[in-house]
Amino acid sequence: MKNAHLIAWALSHPWAMMPERMAAYAGVLASHTAGGLSSAPAAAAAVTSASRRNSNRAGNIAVVNVFGALVEWPGDIDVCDGGTSSRVVSQQLIDAENDDSVSQVLMVFNTPGGSVYGTAELGDVINRVKASKPVVGIAQSLAASAGYWLLSQCSEAYCSPGGEVGSIGVYSGYQNIAKAMEIAGVDIQLFSAGKYKTEMSPFSEGLTPAAVAYQEQRAQDYYAMFTRAVAKGRNVTVDTVRNGMGQGRVLGARDALSQRMIDGVMPFEDLVRRMQGSARGGRSGRSAQAMRNAREIDLLSL
Image 1 (cartoon, rainbow, N blue to C red):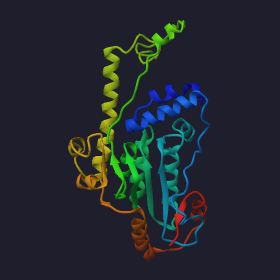
Image 2 (image 1 turned 90 degrees about the horizontal axis):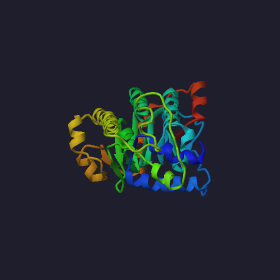
Image 3 (image 1 turned 135 degrees about the vertical axis):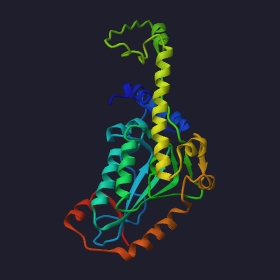
Image 4 (image 1 turned 90 degrees about the vertical axis):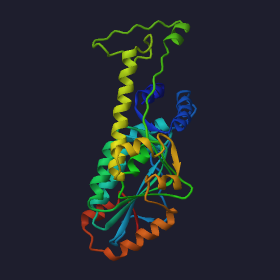
């Protein structure tokens, strides 16, 4: 992806991300466009030094990190100056599901959210994996918007005492630069086929009322997906999600617990110890396929 197209790419996506964080990423995009930043690393660091690969023990806990902005494909990560690909996380969960040395999965969230694209599909993977193995999630220290969408799908959801969760909502943007181009002496003409093909063009005369109504409806469609997923994951009604749970705001750990957004408030280390204690009784043999899968996921050995 060329730097000149980053802002257009970002505006064309529906986002489930904290708007204030998006404002910070907009500065990153501007720096990228001006050539002021180099590409960020594509992968987050391991969650803890206790992580081990290729453990020979059964009953392990697979650790899956969701750090930074969420995007669907690894190639999109540069746009947010570092982040997590939902496709990569999906594969890590599938590897953990297929590894018969793994008894539980721990998802660690520190994310302001991200693109709607890929989030519903990753939520489906979490639901599939938790049908055979517990998938425990913790906000350490932020699971907002798309991040909370995913946290809410876990078998159990926790937040660190100083953490936050929520920001249930979606939005997209539109930027018209026709007047700026005119001032610069650039005359742009569009040629298209299809009644609505260029209605979102930044070089048009602006959005028509019909275009605004359509984009607002798309936001409502994604919001419906988001709130249905949270309602299913948290075993509450859609009305409960829409009329409570922050209504677009993030909530602190205790408030989130009172709104049934999480199952408990717990430091990360305490949650790991609890999961390790429950896993020690369930060790079994390990297959060759599991050994191969372990090379792709982090394991907390017991």
